[in-house]
Image 1 (cartoon, rainbow, N blue to C red):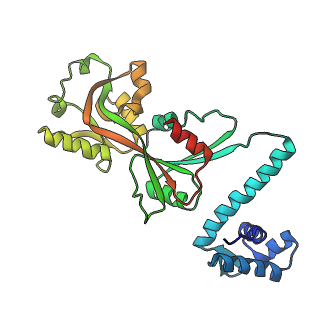
Image 2: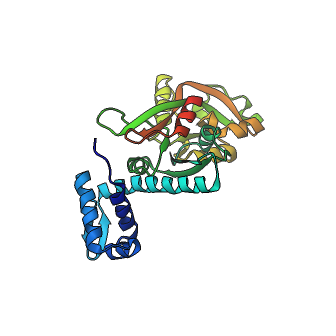
Image 3: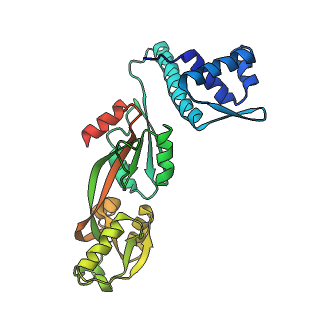
Length: 291
């Protein structure tokens, strides 16, 4: 088993942050030639080039970016250890970096994170983006976990682990007013102002199949990809939405919206995606155990 030279890794980390060999050498108080030699030894051990030159500037290769992510984690953890020992703290603060697809229900995200929200020993970092961008961030370990309403291939040829963590029924939800009190399901669907998820969503695919199986022809009043916007329109547009109940759980509990029917064959699935080669964090194990 090969042992990683952390001295060389620290030199690489400094050069990567400085982006310039001369500045890094001055900061480390070593000669440029010695520093360059250390980097070449690390590249030899790893079997990959970590930098390529553009003029006097050193730019990270794709492998260099990946190694930098690990170096950041290693040396930040070392600094945290020293700080903990110096301050006498007994418990290490765990960082959890989560990315969610932009269309995912905020209520679902909050429900998922509730076991760790407000804990003094957990530092949360949350972001949202498109699915492909989140996978790239996970690949280079800028994220620990992705929350998504679509799965990703998870087999020996991919770097992902994909875990089904929840399924939520989809309902017909609208204003809690007498106007909709006589809504008959499913026969009134063709004559109702409907708010639907966009054509690219799994919910929409299932709903279209449901309508086909029941001989229903519906014309959407609006098609909305973003669940937060669909929630607002359900509340304010005087229309009925095909929407997971979790998205509008607060409005239903408050009585401003009402669930008029459940579409038994239409569900939304939620997935937690992690990277196979990344050591699973203890906090993630706890979250998955609670689910």
